[in-house]
Length: 224
Image 1 (cartoon, one colour):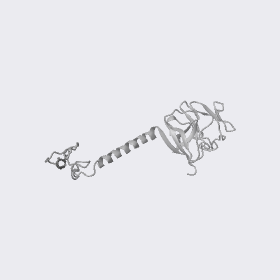
Image 2 (cartoon, rainbow, N blue to C red; image 1 turned 60 degrees about the horizontal axis):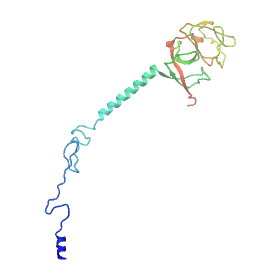
Image 3 (cartoon, helix red, strand yellow; image 1 turned 90 degrees about the vertical axis):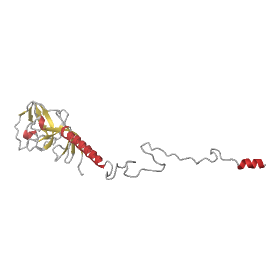
Image 4 (cartoon, helix red, strand yellow; image 1 turned 30 degrees about the horizontal axis):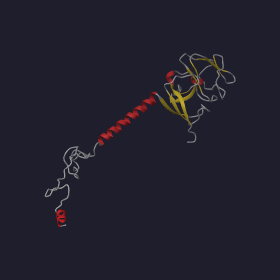
């Protein structure tokens, strides 16, 4: 019994030799550079933890971020300007000269790289005042054009197979004499609402360079 108690009293905890010093806590090595204790963090302004490299550096990368933002805006603006000048266009219709297909206040999107054909609705530069206008291409090329007493268009003596909702009337201020002869590079334009308007019945044919684009989308904006 006494021998058992002596053995128990003289026993020591496993894993630590008698009289050994307590283990030294090893300091971890920061892989990003420098030795630091377990809870030690480099003070601000000494180059650690994303801070500046020294006093007076200011907010990190603020100037570079602003420059990159301005460059992105300039690139986007340049792309949009190029698309607007050479590819697409926007036009707001004023008046009902193209009624019922296009009405007053409609927003039109035009495409400038397509091939023009008879029947296309186009935006063009008016020869009378230079303003953008909207009409439909009646003919392209050399034709003899005239109108019947019932207001029907004659192309080389024949009536085209076109749907015309309103009879064609010659404006009193027309500067064109009919029969009218177009040239191989001429575009003869007519409005859909042909009882009024100022199209090729007034100023004659136009050239390819006067066309500003084919109407590909119409967005109704009446009442907005």
